[in-house]
Amino acid sequence: MGFSLVNNLASLDSQSRLSATSVRLNRTLQRLSSGLRINNSGDDAAGLAIANAFRNDIAKLSQGIRNANDGVSTLQIIDGGLATISTLLDRAMTLATQSASDTFIGDRSTLNAELGKVVAEISRQAQNIGLASADANPARAAWSRFAKALTVFIGGGTSANSSNNSVQVDLAGVNVDAAGLSFATYDSATGDYTVTIDISTQANALTAIQTIRSAVTTLGGVQGKVGAGQNNLAQAIDLATSQLTNFQAAESRIRDADVASEASDLSRLTILQQAGVAALAQANQSNQAVLSLLR
Image (cartoon, rainbow, N blue to C red; front, side, top):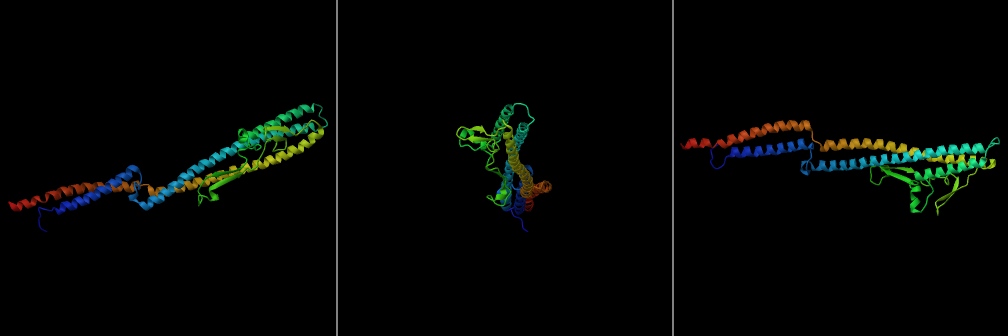
């Protein structure tokens, strides 16, 4: 190999290799500082597309779990109201039974007045939990806001429109106020209730006992729907949480940097860079040997 003053091939080769080492070293430093293997599309275009799809699923499931928890909370509020109404029915049954006895020597009108208060409280409780008589009046629309098929979107299904993305709690037409339990009639024009159950006489009290028994059965059916809805949502939360964990693991395997591997590369590339700088310095000095030929 001859000597040349015009082109220092050894230096050019050293510069090329040092540049490549610096690029790889900078990429390794970027991965270690960000914790990500993919910091831009050029790092892994196909992997980035897959990771982004997983991240989108993670966002959907995260919100879906919150939706389900909100649904559980709503059903718990409804369930608490139903439990209170159940207690009120117990009191109504006590009053009706007391009035139905021949041995009762008190004032049945007093019992009947208390029963009216119990019936009014049943309606108030039903209105508060949104399972009262439907009313077109906007001021009273909240009274029946949950008396419908409640759909809680969670996600995790195979299709955006698939039914397995949601949990339904069917409370359509449910009405547990005084009118719904056959204790009163409801005037949708005024929002007023007229109590129809009566225990002012022994005969009426015997009839009222049957009405209250029927109301207990009706209320039990509603409690069954609400309880089943809570259980379904709890199970859906368990599944969605498992799916969320798996999606996060899948995204991590694609997007996240392997810190141990990158740290090893950092050590190797740092040494290569130092060696490259030393080699480049040596290559730049090689042409000095040509001067000895000219002396």
